[in-house]
Structure formats: structure tokens, C-alpha cells
Image (cartoon, rainbow, N blue to C red):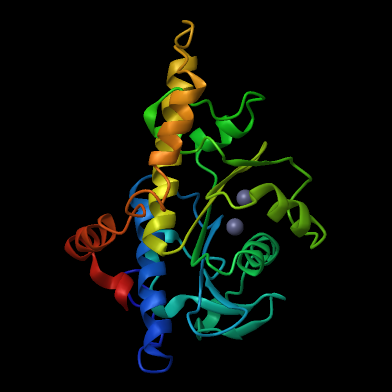
Length: 262
Ligand SMILES: [Zn+2]
Ligand SMILES: [Zn+2]
């Protein structure tokens, strides 16, 4: 470690394919953005990204690093069975991966090959929402795109590979899964898309909690309008979420601290 509180991690640039390096930079950016937007939980939770062009392999955070210090080279490459394939030299820290990540993230990457990125968060808003029997209500426009979100009942800390089957069945073809009494998960065909879904799920959750706290009846929207709005928000109907935002979000990071690219 250097005196300025930064870990010294050997660069992976040029030591992996260009496609993997790009996936690493985007994934590191996603960790920084999740933290920047107040959705991190110290070093808990995970965001994973499939390695393009390599079957059955994804990148994930080293368990022990804060989201705001994650870099492209610090990410660990694992296979669907949780075996570590490439791991940086963390010196005396000797960081590995969190076991629950191997269960939840490998299940999704294995079942949904089109998914490039899986984000799993425990924010106060999504945890509170996940504990409500009513689930996420389509009471705001932002919440309406989550009309078909999945729900997964709590079965204890996700350490048992047997939970994989029910997890992916509950996610189905959706972009979002409410992990009841736990948190949430979003997926995307790109890292930017997955981040956009998570950002909006967080906002929808906060808005619902604020509205429910007002002790006033909630204004309902007719089901036909909800269905039409949901359809208008589908990536097949419009430009997929996050494609326009992603380069701008990375510019924001570059102005603040470009070290995620290291
Ligand atoms: Zn969790
Ligand atoms: Zn996770």
C-alpha cells in the first residue's frame, strides 16, 4: 500500500484481451458509480460482469475492498463453479471473493447468457421495500417499468447452491429481482444498462417509501395504462436504458477520479 491510502495492484492492461480489459474498466466504473450514488454497503454486495468471448467466466470484486477504491485491475476472474482463475497480487491483504457472490451471480450468468452485468445492492430503501408484503407498487412512472419484476423469498444467507434454481426461476426474463427481506438485484445486456435499472429501482423504492410514510391514500393508475407504460419502457420498444448515459457517467468519474481505469 502507498502512503496515500491506495492499494498498489499490478496492472492487467495488456495481460488480458482488449474485450476483457474494456469489461474490467466498465465494471470498475460501475462500482464507483454505485458508491457515488449512495448505493454501496462498505465492501458487502457485488457487481459482476461476464468476460466477453470467454464461456462460463465472469469478473467480480475482491472481498475486502471498498467500492470507491475498486480498479479495473483489482477485479477477480472466476468460473461458474466459483473457482478463481485470475487474481491480482494484493500483497499482505490476500483478498478473495465472497461465497454468496458465487451462488447468486453465477446462477444468473449461467441462466441468462445475454446478461453482461449483474448488480446486487442492499440500500436502506431497497431493503425496506424488500420487507413490504405489497412489494414495489406502480405508483410512480419510474416504478412502472418494474411492473414485471420478480420476487424471491428469503431462504437464509445465499450460501447453498441449491438456491440457484429458485433464484433464476423467480428472476425469469425480468431485469429486476426483489430479494425479499434482503435487497435487490438488476441485470443488463451492458454494464450501463444494469446500472440504469438499479439507479431507477433505488429511486422508485425511495419514492414509494416516502409516499407510504405520508399516511394518505395512494393514487392508483389503471392497469391498462400501467401495461402500456411498461411496454413503452421495454428495451425492445425504445433505446435500451443506460446506453446514452454510460459515456456521460464515465466522464463524470473521469473528472472526479479516473483511477478506476487503473
Ligand atoms: Zn445480499
Ligand atoms: Zn451479489
